[in-house]
Image 1 (cartoon, one colour):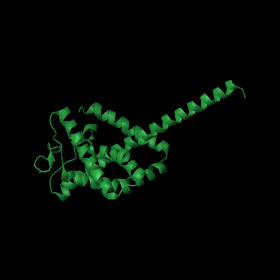
Image 2: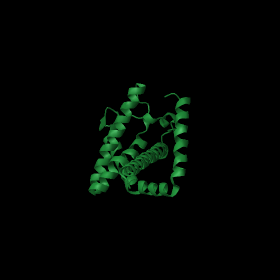
Image 3: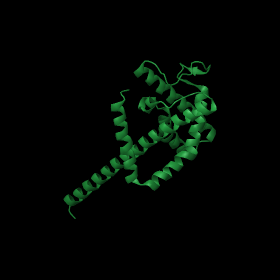
Image 4: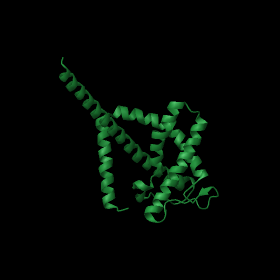
Length: 195
């Protein structure tokens, strides 16, 4: 084999690796997007159940909550997957430390989500912790962060591994279909309901 054919084969190998890594990144993005939407909806409807059954308040699902800016539940799932889960695997963290990290990250996400809602809308009609002593600007509070931290633990140690098994069984073709249905549905939703 001459030097020129080796260079061509080497370049072809680099191109294949590059295409594969891009495809893998897009597949990862698809899964993260699906997690975001599934757990945004699950979180929102768990809150509806919590407020209606446990607290006895009349609370209806909020269609505007489907917009990306007001989704601390989905963002929490993504943060757990991308930030906390790798820390658990890499450093073999004790569950108590994982819980503290989950509480901190949950509070940070809820605060940032509320701040963004206020930035874009001028107020936050969705939630306020102003009447709770441990609140920070009414955007989050220690009690909610503690509960969300507990839910994040359940997600990290039970739900997420099960979901990964489901994704493996589904295969990439079905994941593609789910992704595109959610993505196109979201674009359609935004065009109909101007935030």
